[in-house]
Image (cartoon, rainbow, N blue to C red; front, side, top):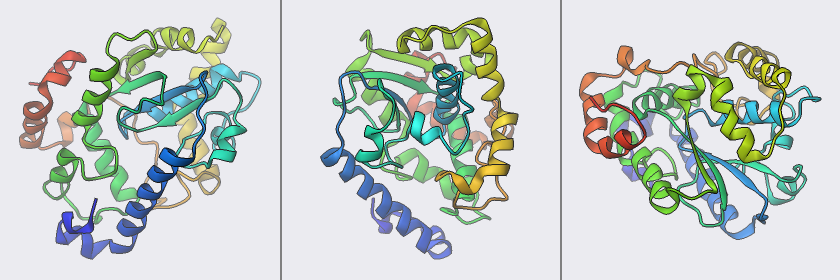
Length: 281
């Protein structure tokens, strides 16, 4: 992605942050393709950004390691994100490794839990995250941001529709590919976690489930952020007056996303939304 693709308003207001972020993504992408060792027993938590991946890996970490206190200081050791850790650090993660990624289809990822979320809620969440990270101006509006979101120019992961289509097209129906809807986790996390634990080979008791849900709640994660924001790469930078862990709710787009942009999302990605159980209209 070149800076010439960005609107002048974005470039002039936050040029340094945008350049550093774009260069960092490109570098991490090259490192992933050339230098990472993946193992046959690796399991990948994959999603388009702002789809509930971080929350899910806290749930997974608390289920896999019930004897540990999971927080922002050790999540990268236990369920690391591949972009925030080099190959040597990833090799130190407990086997079988569970690794977080946002990549579009990658044939090196053999066993995948793919987390999906209504793209209208994704758009809203990514909008606020972009302001937190100062990638867009604080007074930016949806009309400034949505063309970049829809065209997949916010990051190196393509658009929501492209990312989803790449995985569904390559792995739909594969026994080593599990689709998890963020909305199902919100509605009944205990039930939605059952196929995840089975996929991971975790034997969890009722007490373990209950503790994992408590220690991964949005309130608990917010409290961790207040205490440990400087200790985690995802919260160390950006505007700390804005929380990384927002409401965590679903359906909030109805109160915030302009109707015209919601209709554009439904028009562009209606087929994928319908397949995943989201009502486009």
